[in-house]
Amino acid sequence: MKNNIDRDYIIYVTKQCRHVLKPEEEKALRRFAWQQERIEGNELARTKQEWLLGFDDAKTNTIVELGQEIALQKIVNRVLTEHGLDLINLCPNCGKLARTPLAKQCRHCQHDWH
Picture 1 (cartoon, one colour):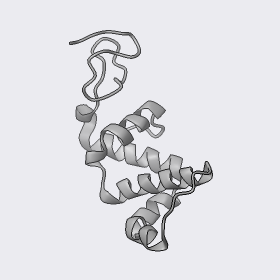
Picture 2: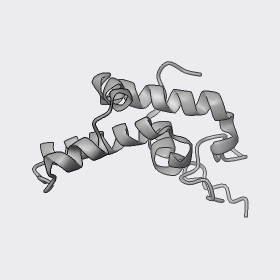
Picture 3: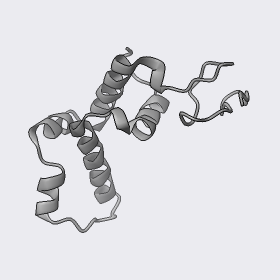
Picture 4: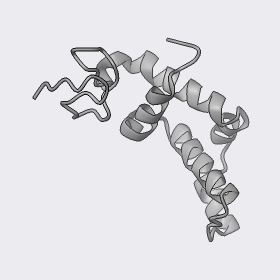
C-alpha cells in the first residue's frame, strides 16, 4: 500500500472500520482523542486508575510513541494491506471514496447507484 495515505482514507478507516482494528490500535486511537481533548481545553475527569486500565500497555505505548500522524498512517496501511478494498466503498463512476460503507451516492461526482 501507499506510504502516504490520503486523509480521507484515514478518516474513513478510523471511523468506519474500527471492527478490524487490533485492540492496541483501538486504544491508541482513544488515547490520541483523549490527548486532543485535553489540548483543546476540554479536561476530562479521569483518574489515574482509569488511565492505567484503559490505555497503558506496551503495545499501545509503542503505537502512541510514533506520534499521531505516523501511527494513523501505519494503522490505515495495515488495515488496507490485510483487508484490501473489501472494506472500502468506492464510487463506481469516479472511483473516489464514499462517505460510509453503505453510501449509495458519491459526494464527489454525485453519482447515484441505488
